[in-house]
Image (tube, rainbow, N blue to C red; front, side, top):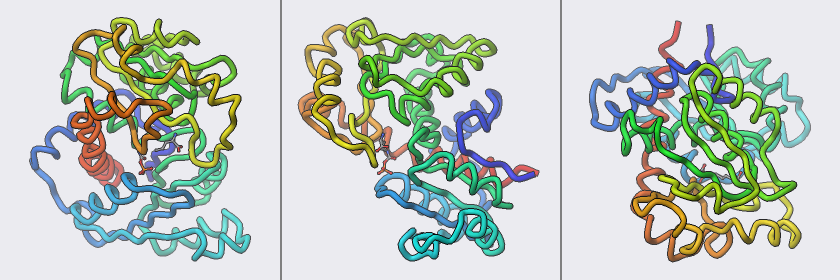
Length: 305
Ligand code: CP
Ligand code: NVA
């Protein structure tokens, strides 16, 4: 049966941990087989990408496969060909596809009609490849202690925030989410995270007070206030200003705090340049780990029977 990766819950907790732990071996260069040999994997992106696209292309090549980049404007999709026909056609050529697009619903529809594994490379609702990799980055740093640390997500309740909530449920983590009133996470993802937490012992706590979330935190995570496709607005900017990750907010966290950012960053908005540079080494390790995690993910999805 084909395995898709549209949201984190497409892997159960045991499988998710297996991928994270396998990433550690892959990063050390252990037991990497050309599991994608003879396979053609498409990358269909309707939004820009630096990290996701390049790390997936490199991962596919390093696993012996062939990556084919597909731009929406070069496809008949841009002229109105419907999603079902695009999915059914591409299934006849490709062995798998990685998609970044605006509408999560569109991706779900594509996946329904595609007879090959589909991987979500970011939608308006979720970014599972990013957060799977971020959990690896924290596992690499904290080992099994990852379950005991306090992780704070501070900022807009966007796709990355939604996915962190699911990750806390799936991996049994302690997550504090601070978003302004009216800019909270999606209720569907919140419920999924809470449901998973019942099985894994995760804790998900929502607040509109950034200081409460960051207080004594081990990790502070942020992302842009305006995601791709969002309209910039003064009102939202004003609401988010108290949520900026700056020296003052970070002084409430543990002295040993680590700052994470999925990138790209808009310095001066969600994070100050000073804080960004202080944690740049960790943030770019976080970016590097996308490559290692995605190799583990591809290996998992394409070796399932
Ligand atoms: N973090 C992330 O997904 O980066 P890109 O938009 O550059 O792919
Ligand atoms: N929330 C951001 C993440 C970018 C990787 C966006 O969707 O633009």
